[in-house]
Image 1 (tube, rainbow, N blue to C red):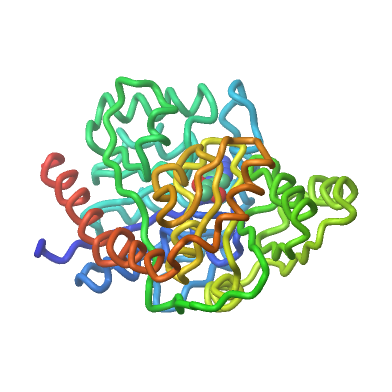
Image 2 (cartoon, rainbow, N blue to C red):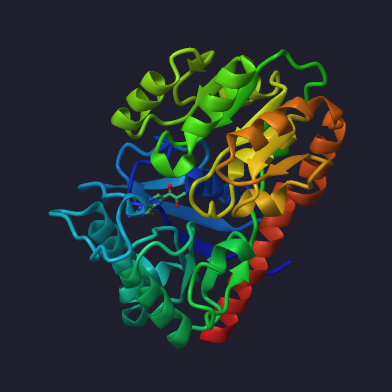
Length: 358
Ligand code: HBI
């Protein structure tokens, strides 16, 4: 096992850890802290104030939250708000950098990529979404050229959205299986998980619920109120039930009792952590064949991959859910998405970066 690493994680600036605003990357940070601490590494996390995480050494950084990149266009400029928590996080990181072997960036923002050459300590950049803007593509490419091997991502389909010449470490994702309880006898209900925002395509899942009249439970951060109200107005007869943003314990207690999870990404979902959370409960997934879910779901074995943006395909997949072996779904989560395997992958990536930097 590698020596004990002293790691500084700099979390996403769009929201405090535990708020749900950071979406899948929050879960990745939580899982990584658990997996790497189990391997003897020391981790501290510089995160926006009001962050909460059991068992983590949090450094609460004040300042204004960063506007989310996934709502901007390809020509959006790099944004720096007044008293940005992003700039305060990186001023702190620069100040304390010599107490660490490696800094790990989880922000999908221009500043940390631009600052990398000005740091003495190496920085690993975990990129949590596909390509969204030219300014970020350029910032990511410059880090790739000056510090090859320091770009990490979830999946091949995600990195395929970036300029082809970049080299990436593919790290996939994981779930803490001890937090998800398998259920063999579901109720007649479906579930949809995620930030309620247009790129997540919730309207298609609601349309499928209206067509099948199977109750659909909806869980996640209500990020876009107008979008949510439009969906409700468009599908007045859909049997839907919005249960808010809940913690993992409450989420799995609801998900495990459902027949299946619906995934309807409009964008190239970098991974889709909700898919492996469902599998960990034995819940099969009906997903658009797009982005991370297309790499995670084994068609016909752990769910059904359907034609993107076609509600009819979702309905067809829903009607075939009971032919999927739920126990096999749990087994796939255990064999492909365990926390210990995640810890080893990241530890090897970090070791390589530190060795190359010396
Ligand atoms: N937007 N500007 C910005 N920075 C982030 O780190 C960021 C984001 N939007 C979404 C997001 N992170 C996470 O929800 C995804 O990476 C999962």
